[in-house]
Image 1 (cartoon, rainbow, N blue to C red):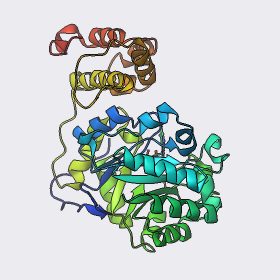
Image 2 (cartoon, rainbow, N blue to C red):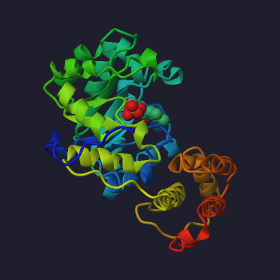
Image 3 (spheres, rainbow, N blue to C red):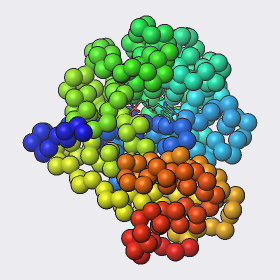
Length: 359
Ligand SMILES: Cc1cc2nc3c(=O)[nH]c(=O)nc-3n(C[C@H](O)[C@H](O)[C@H](O)COP(=O)(O)O)c2cc1C
């Protein structure tokens, strides 16, 4: 267990990103299949992060009118400021996607140049752009010109291990009007191997005027404070530590705000939020507002999509608790909210659920 910092440290200041203020300077990372609307709201409300990002949205899929891609861009008022992240390799399609994001209410547009997955890189998108600086700059130029909201880019350090391409690229992006940059301090060929090299964040900070957000392997308040002090970055972005754990974000935020860490959530609280997450995703999938809890729709398709989507994530809410492994198996077979709720009710003992809203 890492030590958490307590309230004796000064507050780390927020920063400006274009017309936006990111305060506290902790940002929820874009994560495919994770940072959908319902989860982002939990990270904002429980985790108190200063900014959230959508999962990446394919500019090409949007161009062809994919309804699923449009849904990924929907924004709730309680999660602002929010950046919609887009990926693609064609400047005009990317500009079109950026305009769509702005039209749907995004406060900022983020361009993905960090995804290392072959399926994405094969199309010349994501981290493949780090090997094609001319195209990368063309995309940035087209997107910056297309929208009034601020534009940011999320990069890896470079494509091949050891070739630190980010400084030259980032300076060129800055000259094109990009207002913030995020560095995931690994090379694309590393995937998630090894440790993020925070020295690269420090080196990039030294050559940029615009705010730089550091990213990679921050799991606790202590980690975040170390990243700020070692690298001089303006913000810290957190990804994996937040999955099924918005309370981890709350502890990180408390640390950078100079507050005492909030208490760890009880098992009941974890389960309550896991179920709220599921209910909210069902409403989201059914096209209803998802910001406030309410009755579940009679839409078996939406319910099945949401429940299946969460099969892998819900068990993480109770990871480590006695009996959690068996519950994981049961949750992986659920096809309805009623089944999820029954499994979790049984896990905790029904008394703990007296306050759950009924359908
Ligand atoms: C499940 C998953 C999905 C991800 N999807 C995206 C994505 O859509 N766009 C993106 O820029 N990065 C994506 N990432 C990378 C994260 O944003 C982040 O850069 C990375 O996880 C390192 O941060 P961490 O150590 O705090 O997790 C994803 C990571 C994970 C684990």
